[in-house]
Length: 59
Image (cartoon, rainbow, N blue to C red):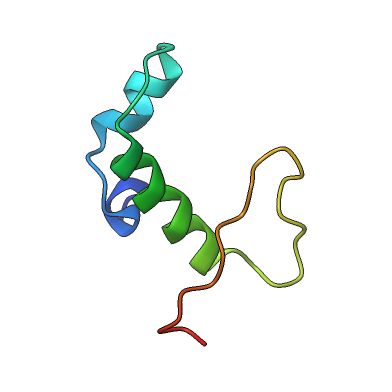
């Protein structure tokens, strides 16, 4: 399974970002939430990237 697939975004997103292009806010939000939900508990979240709050469903 690819990173894009488990993030729920199109694989082209990472090619676009690498090329210096952007993405829609909803695409960014979906990807960052997916990363946050799968981030290892023993690994610090990157300090320069705001981490989304846990959803009410996960609480």
